[in-house]
Length: 360
Image 1 (cartoon, rainbow, N blue to C red):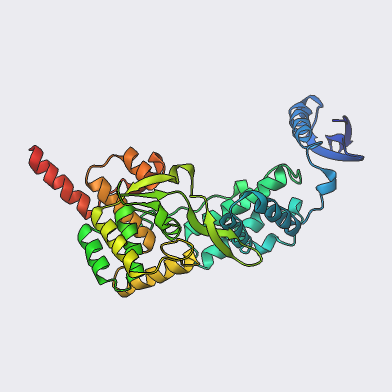
Image 2 (image 1 turned 90 degrees about the vertical axis):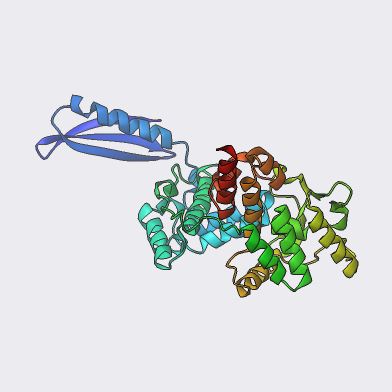
């Protein structure tokens, strides 16, 4: 970096001036208050070091980029490499940061971002939701840092995550008696079988709706989970179709209880096989999940379809199945299983009581 240091007397002290070249333009940094040139040396070293990190990093051609322009470029980029749900999440997050949309990227400051966060708090959005939106915006501004080189530092890195009340987010899991009661109350046949698979096999809703009859191995009593029904295109119209499972761990063989398989085969005999081969040919995972939740609530169970997956895992834990095996069966990592399911349910406590009585 080209620079030089000069001094001049000002207001009964010495003023230090660092002149430096930024592109084709000469700029200055100054400080005064000391009486000798020696006293300025630490400030000079620090300032020159900071300027050296910045000068040459920022792309002059990108300096006037507006936040809205950054957003459009970022969305266009992630649409090529990310899942549609990730794109939708980024678009949703951006809607809550209207106070910075008309700014230049270089002019966005922490105060403006914090005001947006405060507005979300006032609207009573859940802390976990707000933290997710902050994270999505941080990723977008990381894109402005690199590779675009619009800014050197990401202002979202200075925004603190909101503390989350973990007690409110504790997973819901039914006891075996509650699961049996719920399933017995579901009269609509398709919803009964979907709920049965979730509660006794632990599949996610997208995995269930992606099942074909070819995935059911009657001899081995297994379900082959190798795909899911999901959003495959978000714009201009949302389109659902087959997509890969959540992660490579999610490709798996899941044991099916004989009673569940019997119900599934009975259902097969009662309904014509769909031309697509899908067992449950619903078009939309979100609306199906919502309809199931409303039905559960009408039966006095405040749960979602995913809570039946939680119920399944909690039952496995209560009956002594190790975390590694559970992770393989449900298609998650061991760490996720431990962090999510290391808690007590009434069924687990009953199992512990029985074990204690047997041991002692």
